[in-house]
Image (cartoon, rainbow, N blue to C red; front, side, top):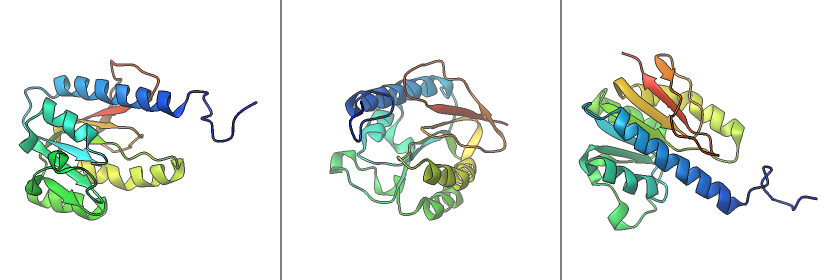
Length: 172
């Protein structure tokens, strides 16, 4: 017998959240090493509650991180500097940032998943090229959802967990 609303895999929402955040942290730690020594910025696609941005600014200098989201819902200490924060629809803010910074990113982290797989797939289809327009050759793209972009090669993450995370290297 299953309880209404219980996750299909039998794990509690707390267990799933721990798995997701652990995998995200481990994937970002791997990516830090994978882009070490490369020039370029970091893209955080989705500020959310600021947890990942806070972690990224411990891994990279804060002024190297460009942050994108529809709105800002974080306390002041987790709010990026105004010239590094792009608020609004990704379909407008990413091209605007690309026009300003060009192919600037050595790492992009896109955490945009929802409980609606169809919505996520449609968003991934238009989001990947927008991210791609800002990526430097050799850069790494991490995401909680599959992205398909010509010129990106899938990378098997050396970190494992119970939550799926995706990585690609941007071809030269």
